[in-house]
Structure formats: structure tokens, C-alpha cells
Image 1 (cartoon, helix red, strand yellow):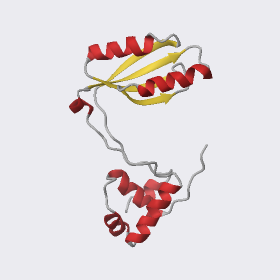
Image 2 (image 1 turned 45 degrees about the horizontal axis):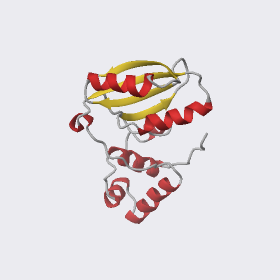
Image 3 (image 1 turned 90 degrees about the horizontal axis):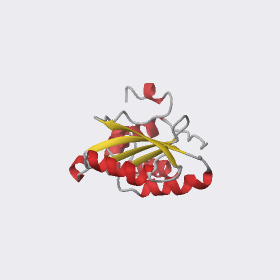
Length: 165
């Protein structure tokens, strides 16, 4: 398990602002958190170097790309052995329909978030890419009706210290 990085209120404020809009300039960040732009640049560089900030992502609307139906697939792999897991994960991650893949505890081994064009495309995906694989014992499908983003990710206890920020 990775070690936590010590973050002060300025770091936390920068992280909150960047999670709300990663395009915020260093000058805007610095003014908002009350530090010099060069200090802000150094802080963000340290957050990247220590692995707190992993990167920036561009979010796209799946429906506008012809993938308006999203689903969660609960997948059970049998036997659940290391030599099968690597190739399975690589194959699922390479599918253009795959949005996220989670390795789980419990009766299901994986949760796969997929985006497809319509119900027949989802059926094709499940039959051709999942249940046709020898190691896949079961696939359960859950359609996603709606999705909401939640607040920025902060360390435990940091929310109260930044409520006035």
C-alpha cells in the first residue's frame, strides 16, 4: 500500500481547485490560494512528483460518440488463477467499449464499465467478448440509467478544514 503524502491547507486547496477545473492557470490558482505563481508552480510540481496528481483527463460524452448505452458487467472468472488474470485484464482493457475495470472481492471477480451503441451491441459484446471466453463463468449486466460526478477526492478529515476555503 502506498504511503500518504503530507499535505497542508494550500496543497489541499490547490487539489480541490484543480479537480473542479484542471485547466485553471497557475496564476489563477496562486491568486485563489494566496501564494505567488512560482510557489504555486512548485507546489503542483511536487504534487505530481510525489504521485498525488496522476495526470489530467479529457472527459467525453459517450452518447455524442455513438455510445449512448452504458452498463456495468459483473464478471466471474473460473478458475481465478494468476496465469488467466493477466491476459483477461489485457483483453478487456483493449476493448473500445471498456471504460473502467475493477478487480473485486466477493462472488464476482470483476466489474467492467462499458459504453455501447444500443442493446444489440451490448448483447454482442457480452456474447462475443465475455461469455465466449473459456475462463468466464458468468456475466451479470446492469444498465446505467444516469451517472453523477461527486465532489473532489480529499484526504480523510480535509473536508472540514477547507469548508471555509
